[in-house]
Length: 153
Image 1 (spheres, one colour):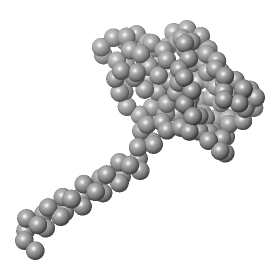
Image 2 (cartoon, rainbow, N blue to C red; image 1 turned 180 degrees about the vertical axis):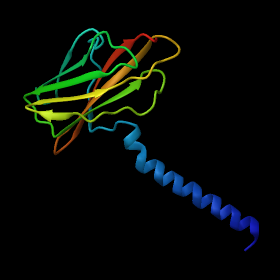
Image 3 (spheres, helix red, strand yellow; image 1 turned 30 degrees about the horizontal axis):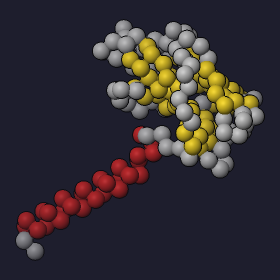
Image 4 (cartoon, rainbow, N blue to C red; image 1 turned 90 degrees about the vertical axis):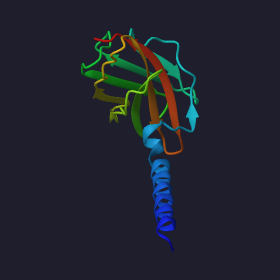
């Protein structure tokens, strides 16, 4: 085996390994779901927002304090009625600009889920965000997107 053939084989092997690792990690980066509901017209930056779940249950998401500002601790609260969720996460992402991985897992207590996060500042000014609530049951994962805007510093 020549040196070039060996080098090409090593490069091909490294590329294959990187492909497998990327495939395995992709659900951590992109929220995957069995069902994705349509986006809500509600402005999460001004008020709590509610939506109807596939089985008729209701989900309400609230982020405080309002107005939502970057680099400030935010309290996240999700309540659900008529539906049972085992776990709850909220995936925060820029609607037009990727801002890195930010997906807090919320703690459950009496039908409510709560947690905290901090959103990074956007240097270009006002930015539109998508907060996708990811609720998991024993049978499926449902994604519920909400949009809001926050002004830069």
